Image 1: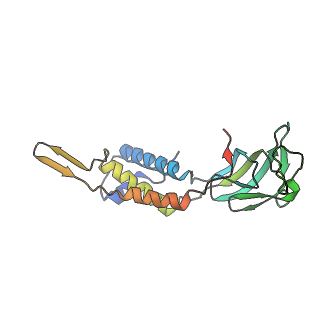
Image 2 (image 1 turned 120 degrees about the vertical axis):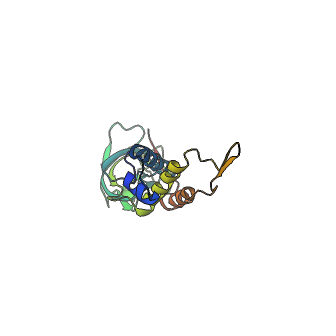
Image 3 (image 1 turned 90 degrees about the vertical axis):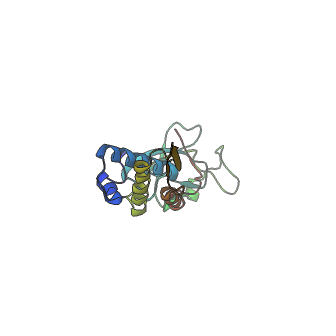
Length: 196
C-alpha cells in the first residue's frame, strides 16, 4: 500500500536532505503500523466487496468513513442463493452501521430469536469507503514515526562504546500520536466478523 506521506514531507520535517529510498521505506513502515493499529486503510476504495458473518440486528462495516453502500446481498444457513436487499426497505444505514428492518425477519430461521426476529447469517456488502485525502493527523503521525525510524532505527535509549556514550529520549512522540489515532479511528468492537 501507498505511504501516507512523501520523502519530501519527511525531509521538510527533519530540516535536512534524506536518502529517498530510506525515507520511503520508513514512511511505508510507519503507514503499515498505523493501518495495523487502527484497523483502517484510510485510502479511498470504491466498490469494495466484503463478506461478513451476520446473525445480528446491527452490522458494522469495518472500514470508515462509509461513503456509499452500492449492494447488499444476504444468505441464511441452508439457503443456496444470495438475496439482494433494498435500502430503507430491508435495512437502514447510519454512518458505518446497517440496521435490519422488520421486513428482513423470518420466523423459521435457525438464528431466529423470539420477539426480535431473524437476521441474515452471511452478508455480502459492496461499499465505498476511505478518504480522498489522507487526514492531517494520520499524515503527521506517519511523518513523526518515520522520522524516529530514520534518526534512531534501533530505538535505543542509551548506547555506550568505550568512553563514548549516547542517549536519546525514551519518550517517543510517534507512540503518543499513534495512541491518539487509535482512539480516534479504531471503531468499536464490531458485531460482525469478517469471513475469510
